[in-house]
Amino acid sequence: MKIPEKGIKKEEIFQALESYKVKDLDWRSGKVMGYVYDPGKEAEAVINKAYTMYLAENGLDPLTYPSLLRLETELVEMAANLLHGDNDVAGNFTSGGTESLLLAVKTARDMAREVKPHIKYPEMILPLTAHASFYKAAHYFDIKPVVTSVDKVSFRADAAAIKEAVTDNTILIVGSAPSYAHGVIDPIQEIGEVALENNILFHVDSCVGGIHLSYMRKLGYDIPDFDFRVPGVTSISVDLHKYGYAAKGASLILYRNKDIRKYQMFACSRWPGYTVINPTVTSSKTGGPLAAAWAVVRYLGDEGYMTIVKEVMEATKIVIDGVKKIEGLRVLGEPDMCMFSFTSTSDKINMYRLADDMKSKGWYIQPQFEQQCSPENLHISLNRSSVPRSQDLLKALEECVQNIRESEDEEDDLNFRAEVKKLSGNLDDEAFFKLVTLAGITGNELPEKMEKVNQILDVLPDDITESLLVEFLNNLMVSSGGD
Ligand SMILES: Cc1ncc(COP(=O)(O)O)c(C=O)c1O
Image (cartoon, rainbow, N blue to C red; front, side, top):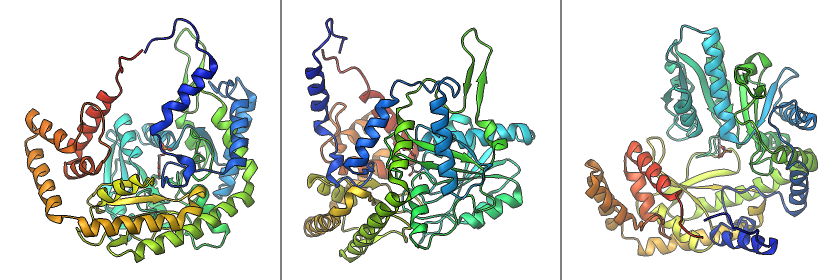
């Protein structure tokens, strides 16, 4: 595409923007069981207005717009309060969970450089269920991930394994509250003790859980301590754009005090331009997401969040109980909040086919690959807009499972997997071409049905899967050659 010589009429532009969305997931439908956190029409209007009010304000640094500094400080205070931090807690607004986690890791690395200079090869302890962003952080900041086991039944991190994994090079321990894949909270109290005993920073990834779990507690649910009440916890990430129901581009990274937070900051005066002082990764950025997040938190208040969390948890119980009753399915672990995963009780139900069949009925359920700690499964995250859909979801799931049970050819699946394994043993150009053909990929287009693609990605070793994904993305994001 080229920039048009003459500007185009605004109606045409809006029409084009609308038409580009035809293949997108319909997030308003309540049938998208992930990605979406929909606070409802009224709150959405508040978000939209606040977002546009601050769209042009630039958060380049916190000094230029006092309004942005104030909004950020107040949001941090509200979250610190919710997570039982005291007035010493210091934090920042970031673009999302990934940025918050990158910063937590960078902070640990830079702090270790100063206070533990003997460490030349820093390590970070990650339970198997820690979020992928920690691997990204390890990759960006050159830190060795030391991966520890999780309990095979509960999928919670094993504090004893973490204790054993501590070395003189450990700069950070990570726990999740909850982990994304299975929705379970790690034993934060026990891990905190290991961190304290060894004088190591301990980050709790509460990106999905920070807000939702806090309100579950207020509602009387039995939620173990996972926040600043646990003495060893030194930082917590909490996303506002997930169960805070804010617009995308909104997360917080909180530290127990500013003596730790200072290692997150970056300043540069050694170039001929303006002075750079950045608390987070980006420099120039719109104030929109910050203002919108501040607005929705103020708009919903404790009462609004409690109403949503109560409804979502009631729906979650219905859905989890319902899934358990569907013959051939089993829920993994005992999920602590409104996200969970389920698998097949035998090889009879191909989970990736199930995801495709649900998609053809308009439901989006996320496939999750087999890992050493977890079988192939499907993941469901409920949110406010999925509440009225609980029974429809179960009905659709039951129908699809039934269909697959009647038609599934287990033998075919096993043969397919065996063929992929064989090809991956020696992945030369010819084998690669065969894999792509088996997957049904034509050009850069993914097939409508993702079952074969998912099966292939699942069977291949992680390093090959990752290279394939990079290759695919690299080819996907290129010029379309159109006008
Ligand atoms: C536990 C956890 N941490 C981190 C992230 C990354 O968040 P984001 O997608 O906002 O970068 C997620 C995303 O789902 C998550 O569930």
